[in-house]
Length: 103
Image (cartoon, rainbow, N blue to C red; front, side, top):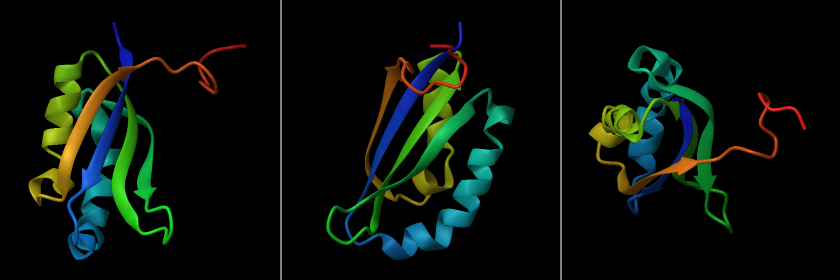
């Protein structure tokens, strides 16, 4: 059964140049997610509270299981470049605002 997962990734300090350099290939990779059995439903960078600088990534993906998500995240160009200090993947129940559910 397919379900949703939230992916929270936090950048290492002083990685702005890496994030900016790799961002185009990261975005291309996200658009190819279905080839990996994962569907990115929403996503974007998280921002520092005072300066709005990008400091991480938040994705909501749909997949058969957490292992598929972990494989997908592991192949992300950001991961391969060592951008993140921490990545957490959690099963997630999309209720409010889910375009596939009728209220």
